[in-house]
Image 1: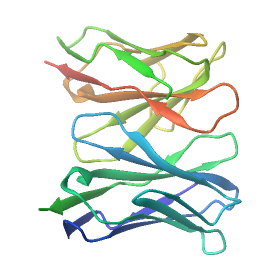
Image 2: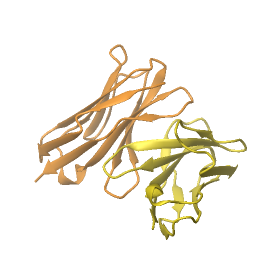
Image 3: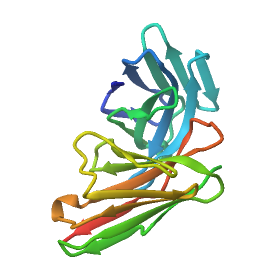
Length: 111
Length: 116
């Protein structure tokens, strides 16, 4: 089955700096890669996703890049703000199957 | 966007009792729902995949007789923790995928279970 590795597990940045979280996957059949943000005690919320036919997608301060050859995809957050502090999860979905989640990255943005 | 509700949001029960958690898709039909368990500061652990009108598919190591899943309609799936024990205490989260073919999962707010 699919195996997703996420790095780093914790990330601390100064407000205004950029943050990058990287995930690698194993199943070449995976074709959908969402990123979720989860604040403490709350539900994961989709913040951005990318499909395998696209190399990059951007939404304001958030972008995701996908390298199918190397089987990795990354989340980029620019001009970070304290409210970006949360746990971020990547996931990989092969076809119509189930998503496999990374272990999460705890992002702390220091004012 | 799509909304998924979960009820109850938290529950405290005595050891040996059963607890039912409901997951509803409020504005879309969900042919597939997923049940996750999440421990503090850890990732989402998939317990089972629930398909409307058929038996749930359980992940390895998850006892199907202990965690009963029923997906009776396109908008409702239930998870029943039977004969709960303190080690079952956890945060249980459901998610639903739009039956129109979308890949996006929408998560419920979660249910915090404490077994005394």
